[in-house]
Structure formats: structure tokens, C-alpha cells
Image 1 (cartoon, one colour):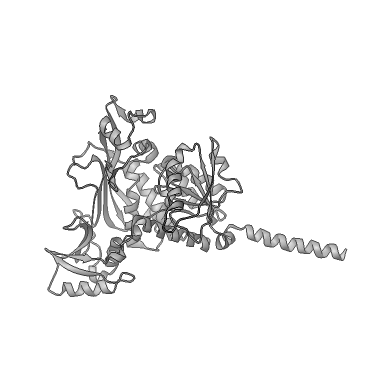
Image 2: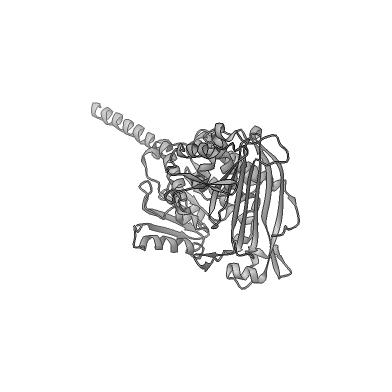
Length: 462
């Protein structure tokens, strides 16, 4: 009896240790991320695996309804595995079938779900992942309409058990050196004078971007999937690219501080309008000979397709007036390609992000009260910027252009790797910070509300 009691006690103790080990927060501190990639229709899914990561297991589980749906993803993984310089060693275990979503949560599959593709179905994939205790690393946008936002809100604000599961989106723009410079300038209120507020005819923060359906990448025509033209799947202009700019506003003005969505985010107005592409332009953009059946709801007279890819929203964040304008043209008629502009108006400065004389996007600063010593003050501010060594300024007309050392520029892939590092660290910590959760909720509250309340206007000219 004594022997039995001893082993019984030992079993009980071991069970206790085992049960503690099953706690998601404990697992997150010890286990590698084991990826489950679901329905990867966008190349960002593959970027997670562009480089070997010490926090990610080399075995990856892939699930989709057919092999054809993941051809692009698998080609990129093969490219990463076979390149000469620093090849990866991914082993892909795939499953194809109509029941792929049910199979994706088999206990033998991964503990982190990677999502990039169908934005309309994405929230349902996220819900399933959370229900099965899987963390989620997803491309933006997480949701594209008000119904999706309500589901996301319920997940983010879930009970104590669900809080152990991380849901995180890929906000790469925080790692662009130009945005980091602007953030530092804005938060140095002794130098900037603080953001302009209270002047109804002036928007303190403005983001404007122009994109093109037809474009070349690395000297070759970019072929877009048919899904890209289906706003019911992809999302309209108001809920897609805008997520990056909203996140930047929050990050620049409220970094690591919890946002009160009900009190600090106020939508003022929003508009939406369509871009029309001829059949020839659609063929050039996709390589498809005809409009596929899934897009017929957007096709007019079998001659053109209308895409509500354009949107503008005005809102205030903590009282600061913000305007975000995103538009898509069929193709660049002036040869300039995609364009981006932003300005930030403070009581002492006008800060702009725009192309320089060589067409490279740069940061420009204009002083409203240059008394002769502004260049010296600016130099002192730049030298004091944490983590950004070597910044200088040169006078260009009435403004000062920030000269950024080449080693401070990161590629899109490098930005992505930084976001991945942050996500892996949050997993090790076992929790997504409260401020990050509030950033996600505030961002998608605004995009989906802007869409829901948008006024439809006529197409604007280039």
C-alpha cells in the first residue's frame, strides 16, 4: 500500500506538472512557433519564411482547398530553400481538400496560424484559430466590414482564457526610417511646438497615396489575381491600405498608450468612388482573357469592370484632425508610377514626406519662424535621435531635407522581419500588450465605420 501510495502521489505530481505545461502562457514562453499556413493567396504568407528564424520550427503545415490555390506560395518557399545565399530548410506538409479548414486544427499541426489572402474569410479563419487555442499572425486587413469588426472585437475583448491567444496584424510601416524620424520630431514638442489643433480649415496630419492596377515590378508586368478586383473579398479602398496610415497616426501620437476608442477616435466624414478598367486593361493587369464568373457582379456590359478601390476619410484622433486619401488608377499615364505624400502641421513646423529632386521619397521640414538659428537647432535634434545615427539636413529652397544614411533604410522584407520579431517576442512573453490590442480595435473600428457611413461620389480625375 505504501508503494502504491508513493506512485499514486508521483503520478498526481507529474499530472500537475503536465497540466501546467498545457497552459498556453507557459507554452508560449518555451515552445518554438510551429506554423500552420491556411489558404495563402497573398505573397506575404511566404515572407514569414523568407529567412530562418530561431523562434520558428522548420516544419510547416499547409492547408488549402487545392494545390493550384497555393502555387505562388510554394514557388516562393522553393526559391527560399534553393537560393545560393543563406538558403532556408523548410519542410512543407500539405493538405488539400474542401475540408481544409477543419483539418488545419488537427492536434499535430502548428501552434501559430499564418493568414494572407481572402480578406472576407480571414475573420472566420481567425475565429477558428482562437477557438482552437492557436495564435494568429495575419496580413492586413483583419476585417473589411462592420460585421467582421464585431467578431474581431469579441475576440480581442474575450474572456481570460482567450486572452492567452495572440491575434496580431502585420504593421510594417512602423519600421520605415522616415516614419521613425517624423515620430521623433512630433514628440519633441519643445522643438515642434506640438501638433496644430483647432483650425477647422487645416488638417494636421494628411496621408495621400496613389496606386496602379497595371504596373511593372523588377522590370516585369505584375499579374494580379482575379480576387484583387473583388472588393467583397479584397475589401474596398477605405478598409485596406488605410490600415497602415491609421496605425502610423496611433503609433506616432500614442505609442504604447492604450487608446479609448469611444472617446479618442471620431469619424468626421468618408467618401468612396470607383475606378473603371476596360477589358483590355483588365487583361493586361491579370493575364486573363475574359472577366471570370466570380467578378461578373462588378462587370458592366461585358466591356469594363468597376472597382470601389478609392476612399477618403476625415477623423480626429485625440483631437488632432487627420485626413487619409487612398486611390487606385488603372495605370500610370504620366510615367511616375505609384505616389505617396504626407504632411504633419505643428505650431512651429511643416513636416512633409514626399519625393525629392531625384524621385526618392524623403522627409522635408519647413520652419514657420526661422530666425536664423533653425538649422543649428535642427542639427542638434537630429543628432539626438535615439537609434538613428548619422542624420543630417541640407537646405532645399525654403525647406530642409533630412539626409538619411543608406544603412538606415530597410527593405519591405526587412520591415516584415521586424514585425515578425515583435510577434515572436510577444509569444515568449505570453501576452499581447493592452496598447497593441487597443491599436487593433481603434484601427478597424475606424476603417469599417468609414466604409459603413461612406458617401458614394463620382470618379475623381487623375
